[in-house]
Image (cartoon, rainbow, N blue to C red):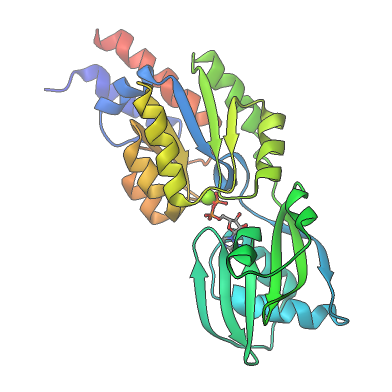
Length: 284
Ligand code: ADP
Ligand code: MG
């Protein structure tokens, strides 16, 4: 039978907005030496705002209408920022495909529209000014019929407790803090520096995140992964303790997680470890 202390631990966690899906994870969190976090939605709000629209077209509204028409088919936070900013759009897109980790592609007025990151444009061999990739903000590059026609700069914010989360994790003895993201490296490195993380990798596809966590596990590390996206479900499953943001998180992330942070606060990762340690004192 499960010792009473474990029930106490699960209850204490729950009062802090942390859902442990099994008593064994209370013990596992105390062994963690590496915490790997997703950027968007985990350390940042995941709510983007349009900062700047740059287009070669004379009519910015028309440019925005083309982009919004295809982004309308995507639920990605980046897409939501763009469609929200464009407002009510009269153009209708067809045959829209979402290309995970890249962006979207569709037909508008019979013209092929690509909206996504540099990787997407490179995949379709569209030439663009690569200095855009160095802009330390998320950018949506747009191509129509194979030519670059503009880009939209959008920005996210660090969560209010992101810095505190890092401090609290170090205090709990976590040795290695890593951030993995599908977003461009320029913004990923900026955030990592602001938060003083040990390592950060950008431009990753979902399978690259899996490979990174596999690499860490192969080094005999006890690894937690914390994420929110549909794409994060495989790494959540793979890690020793998989965590998901409960409010913002996708259903897939929440379902596969061992621990759900219902308040979406990254500082609760350290709280979960602290509760695990307290429970251990009671149990043993
Ligand atoms: P992450 O959640 O780590 O940013 P994703 O795999 O969801 O990873 O997305 C990676 C990148 O792909 C985004 O940062 C963005 O640049 C681009 N992207 C994904 N979906 C879209 C979209 N619908 N429109 C524009 N860009 C997108
Ligand atoms: Mg994400």
